[in-house]
Image 1 (cartoon, rainbow, N blue to C red):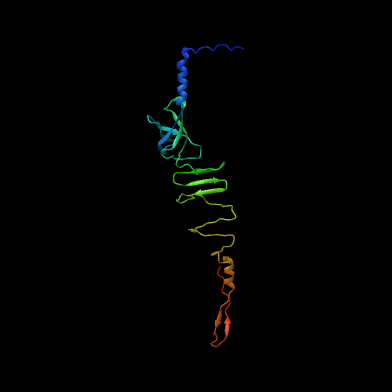
Image 2 (cartoon, rainbow, N blue to C red):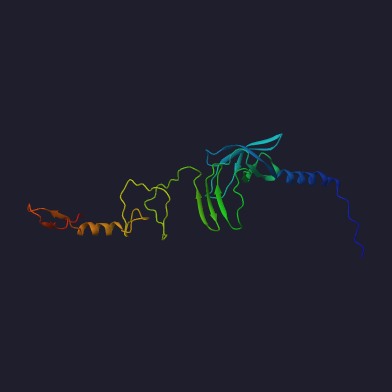
Length: 211
């Protein structure tokens, strides 16, 4: 079966086809961020697309609840509506130097350029403060539903400590809890030698428990 000979493109269509082609080419851009304005309702960035093309005041969108201020030099992808290079939106960006590497399939990590990270690893969650303090603020209560809370450093507090269970210090050598030590203290006796001026020894009464 012979196919019909294709018709030549109408010469009048050529400008429209070329315009469509170049609009598609101009609709995507890849470059690097050179400046970020994070002070307004929407984040605006300056993006260098090539040696001769830099776009300023370009809107950057991110998922709700996830904010960041990418450092200069971050890679970025922008979409330009209708191929208009003055009407762009940055839809993705990243930084090669500060990217958290070697994630296993399914793992997630939030990280920055200072070494701080929250790593949802396959073995558990790891919070790295990057040598900076970690602050939990504006909360009336913190609940840790865990059978063991282990701290390798000191614990300091400005308020009281209330505990429903027992407390034991110097745990490597001390077998007694604070309650056990208090019971031993409240029941112990002291010998009172030569109380009558002779050689007799009597035993004092137990001390009055201090509540």
